[in-house]
Image (cartoon, rainbow, N blue to C red):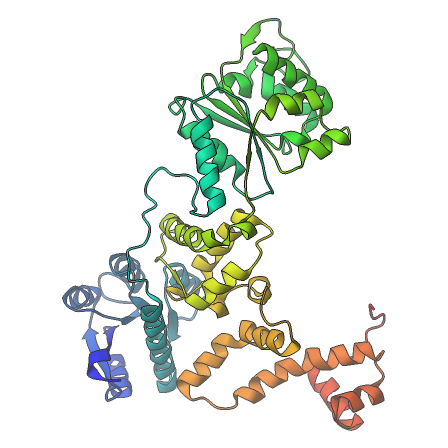
Length: 482
């Protein structure tokens, strides 16, 4: 590595022997080496120069390594850090990973372990620099609730603008996970009711027998267990907005009562005589095709026409894929902030996979995937190897070779990279042993555990197959499923 691309390393350890071993191991390899005996010295060095990678002992005089790791990761988000521990306990490992450590070494360690760790860290830093976006990321600190720039999202923005300051009832239709509640909240946010309550009711999540009292409230003694008066959601919404999500799942008898409320703008609590005014604006949503549900008799036609005078369609994510990078960046930013983790970046290759995937769970699935990747990825760069198998396989090579290669990368990517970084041998032997078992078992299953046929298909003799079955712990089940 040339001096202009020097990889700066900080070693924080109070044991002079450890510092000496690391210095002897890494000197002459083009790395910039910096040493500190405690957290205070380490902090000063980090403030003085750009450090790429820090290796920190847990047990330090004064501030311990975990505290140092947490504080300095917050102060230097791009800094990769690993810890050295004399006790390889699950608690230490979990704590280190929770605090954002790249990896950890256990004392006593081999020279090869240090070389491999630093090599992997160097590759990670270079990869992160390669994929770093030069322009400033989008600022999501404003009040916009819906993220996207696609044509369909711009149409939704226009619809929200048209309807926000009216009192007309709105029907939002779209698949699960498309952000129907966010659209409802955005309508409320951009209306004159913004300072009033926004009350959401999921009609599919509340048992049928409870939904009426949940909406209308009830009087004391209205039914067994009604020991006091309780205001319903319609009443709690006051002069704000009430959002009836999954209205298509509302029971027919309750649909008739809701229709009367919308027509008369008044209602009564269950078991009560007092007439209350509906002051809230009503917004509804469904993941069903309500017209089809009406035709099948599952939804009242008169209620449908009452709530559908203004409709907004929440577009599925597969139809607005140009929004995936922006949504991903938003979830990376907000997720890292909420969880107190360093902000991640997504490589171009990984982003291509995210865009290609169809996202049957829509934006909600993407959000959960990004949240999981933020937690599970050990570096600040999310790459293809970090993605779940269902995402990586979607839209990729359909031939056996491409799919199988990706399966190997999914399971063995880290091992392969570590071996390449360290120059360690026997990689084929290590991985082949794990690949043999499912391959042999699948062949045996397809030939009904006929060992002669299986050996011929595998290209080995029967005695070799018998030896492998014993070594791999394979035997015919008592009852093999087809």
